[in-house]
Image (cartoon, rainbow, N blue to C red; front, top):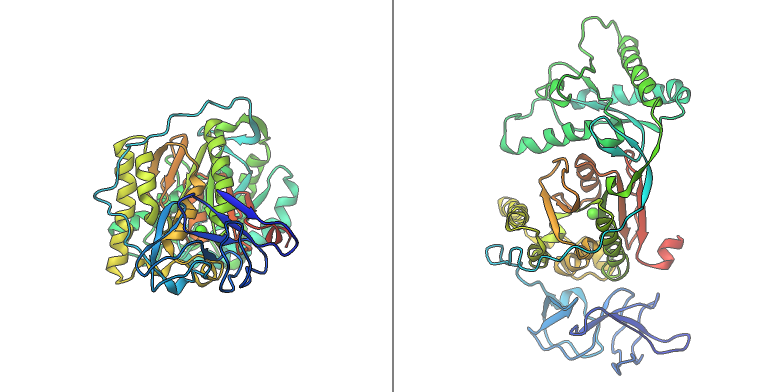
Length: 453
Ligand code: CA
């Protein structure tokens, strides 16, 4: 990567990621002005907004536009050296062919282990370790969500202050469970997700379900084997709303007592399950925040931790860079399986990949999903990919894991939680109020002015 700053207050600044690139990113807050001379001698001929690309060479019609040393598209019309390589001038390349990508051909050797790093966590009976001590109340159907929200407010006001070792009370509500096609092949995704969420390491094994009673998704399916803890609002013992709320409060109080007896202890960093995500990305995401996160991901893997990266929609166009890193051909096949699922999903809907990136991504300088994907996978660092999870599956392996999720922030966050993520690191270039109730989220911004805001 070369960083050019020619000196002086108004000096143009650009970042070229790879030596073969024929574009660079404008760094100056107010962009590059026509007439500026870059350090390599390129004279800027258009206004180039911050984060957008400037051509470092003449790029003839149909020639490849290179960033990260990869083809992010082909020129539409001749692009002159010094011109703004605006989105409408970049034709999107075809995605890598899944049948011919390399499988486990360049598996990175393990880096030296890092010893002695710890965090203060809560050990659970099932062997997992939480970063928080939360009472979660799950639901088997959307009909109970409003009642549960009312009960949660009462629990927070009346019960939680008595239990200082409990961090919070959260409702796991959703739109699923009533007259759904419970046996449909894809129903496994929401059901498995709700089962996994109820058992999240930050919930201490104290599972509690609020049910209506007549729903297709019977609440027993969300309870671990041999456990009790269901409040059915259609129970004939209840007379009126207050009785239902009273039953929820009573069961919550018993669980809060158990959770309150737990204390934090020093545990090795290898017990952390860290999720990586980006949202509201800009052209700097792939230059500053995501590579920094990739560096941190490598350190965590060396410390023995589990690190999950996700976002199928943004990995698809960079899959040829990931399948060679799969620890085994079986892991590569699982990566390809998740990408094929996405291709099939797009085909069924008659949609294409151009739905991503978003208008905000484009304003931030990302021309298309290929450019976004190349920046996005920088989060994964350089380790071997040790495993692949289908959406909502609980993680078992240590090391770098691909957890298949959509890129949409809260969907990805929820599915990473279901997979057992206990800490998320979230990079952003445009900013977002995103957060999760069930696990801490560390935000990393791509630019200084965003971090200061
Ligand atoms: Ca995202």
